Image (cartoon, rainbow, N blue to C red; front, side, top):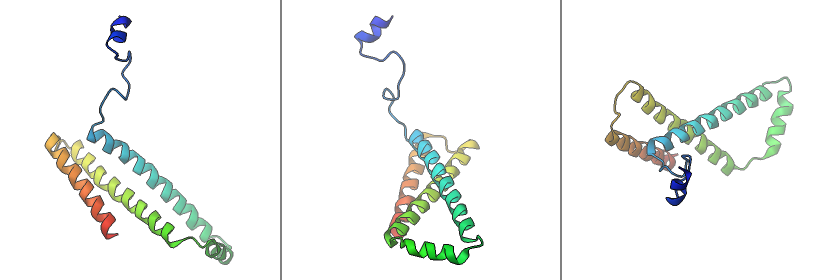
Length: 127
């Protein structure tokens, strides 16, 4: 049995490299990554707010001012958070629509994928 697989140069067990990635699977993976990124951001944001609102507000404010974070870092950070948020929102909406059994055809998948990419591009342009 194993000789047949060695002759045809096919792997014995299925592997990720055997399958071509589908558009829906890539969107699903990026949906999970954006969810983890948003969870990390909001957790960090809440910790940051907790530090600011502690009893040593003046000392904490002076410490934050002394960091002198570059304006470009803040702009890019806001841009990534905005992209993660809108991607997660649009892709989550697509999953909810699919859960109700609508738009499950391949042609709708490609149209929604195009809509998702165009909307994220517009967010990048007009941010």
